[in-house]
Length: 438
Image 1 (cartoon, helix red, strand yellow):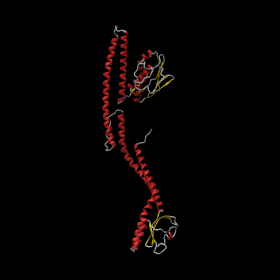
Image 2: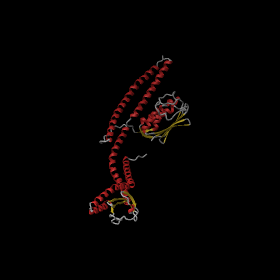
Image 3: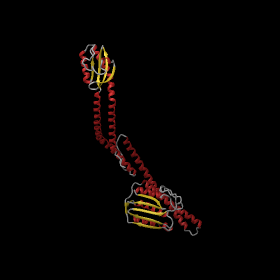
């Protein structure tokens, strides 16, 4: 599955945040702007009334006129004053319409009314000051216009912000992602047991700390794996040497003509178990080597020649069980690690011979780079194909056959290392092992 790059995600997330922020701003403007505007005016209108009262009381008519004019120009607030003893406003404005009649006026009350001619919504505040009515009002209809303008600017701002984030996001993410890619590439190399990569990233943040931790981990892993390789190599010699000595000594004792049958059987058991132990050690050492292997060879291998040598090597099993081995092998060459491929094919072919019924056929076919090894199985109704690759796991009816349960474990690990696909299945009591070679 193709994954999106981190730089793309950074840009998309930043763009999404901007869109969300603009959407919230627009929503607040639509639903709460008018309430906020009215709330502010309700606090301001009584203060204006106090200022008008002061100017009237001190007969500062010119100052009052200028004050009213400034309110209109700067804040779109209209102040109407009714002359003392009159029943209409001085400038003849606001004298008609529901709520503007003298009998409808209430002091220090707020109203929202519609003008008769324009149907524009206005906020009204009336107060009686020294036997005069003072009406302070402002239009609310202008807010609808402002809401639209705010919406347009929010939308325009979102596009501009996204465009800017695209530019700066690319610049920022390139450096940010470049360091992550360095870490990613180096961790891949570490997974291949290659510890020679440069892991240093000079940053004073979490990435820099992560880089330093990976570097320390890499160094410790390299030391541990080198120690393990030395241990495996030394152990192989230390274990194989005494077993070889035991085997050779037992063989000498078996040649003694004065040995009775019971003692001879004991010698045979010791020799058989020493061979078994030697084979077990060899396979365990190969498994250990696979776990710490740093590189594999890539060489041309003639498969037909290799398979024929393996079949010839195990012909004693073929003869002892009176098996017929059918070979149908094409001339095929592949580029691969010969040593490990040979180990894997030896185990597959050896198993097909060992676990085949006596007097049956074993078929080995290689065509179009596909190897098929099939054999008639010994009875084992409870065989679980998922468990045959588990170390030391053997079928319940196979305990009488020599083996240690590591052969197919080696096969699985080697094929994983060499990137070779395979499948196993049972059909008509026949065990099928298919290997897809490149």
